[in-house]
Every structure is written in structure tokens, then in C-alpha cells.
Image (cartoon, rainbow, N blue to C red):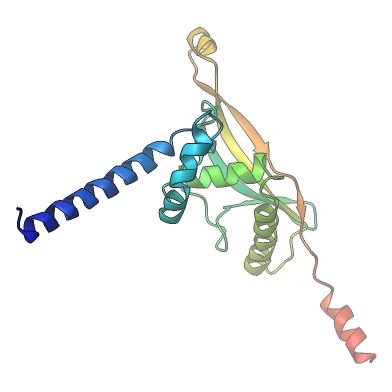
Length: 193
């Protein structure tokens, strides 16, 4: 007969091994797309665990080959007099964006997937209008995001011309900034009451 301490150690070791095996299976299952024959059934066993601990994968980052070697986001602001001024897209300071895959992905979604991320895009645009107004003391007419990129050539073209990429721009839709009423008009209407 084994002493209780040995049995307890064995039970603890078996429990730890089972927990580690479950964790490893959960991490492995996140790499199995849900639209396969076994996907839905296997994901059901691990979904609560992977969701709670943030172990899920977002497959959007693996969907296509890269098309750009570089993307630089810029906030393009049209003033009420028609002139266009470029600012950095990071709010509220209007700083230039550092070279970051996450930020490039964010601004890429605001340009190319605007309908999918409409609430985020509208919130960003409204905040950008306020940030520009705060910095310049003038309400801008509109804002939009511009991505200045280096689009990659196909391999055959790279071999033929010896260049890897060419400049290409993409822009979001124009967001018209809400215009604050004229302060003089407000004072007059309040005084008439």
C-alpha cells in the first residue's frame, strides 16, 4: 500500500499533466479553422477556455499575401477655405504614426473595411475633427485617412525591371466635420430671449 503523501503527489502530478494537456490542445485547436468538418465540434470543447484567457486567433491577419512593403497613415484635413493640411493620425496629439504592424492594420481597416468597422471609423473621424479644432482653434471642413504605400510588384516584374515596389495611395471616405454655430449668432439669439 502506498503512503498517502505519495498518492497525493501522484494525483497532483496527474492533475497538472491533464491541465497542461488541455491547455496545449486548446492552443492547437485555435489553429484549426472552424469551417472544417471537425472544427465546430472541437472548438466547442475549448471555446470557453480560449475566450476567457485570450488564446483565440484572428485569422484576418493570415488571409492574403502581403501587397505593400510599407504603409504610412496620414490624417488629411480640408480647411473651410479649401486648403488641405496633413497631420499625424494619432489622436489627440495628431502625432505621426510609428512603423507598427498593429497601427497599420488599424488604419488599413479604417480605409479598406470602413463598412465593417463603421462605428470605430465614425468615432475616429469625430475625434479627429475635435483634435484638429483644439490644436488650430478652427473647425475643419472634413477629414479623411490617407495611406501612402509602396505596392509590391509581382515577382516576374521585379525580375524584369529590378524594382520591388511602386508608390500607391489609398484613402478613406471623406468625413464632414460638424460645424459649430457662429458664436455671434448664439449670443444674439440668447440676448433676444
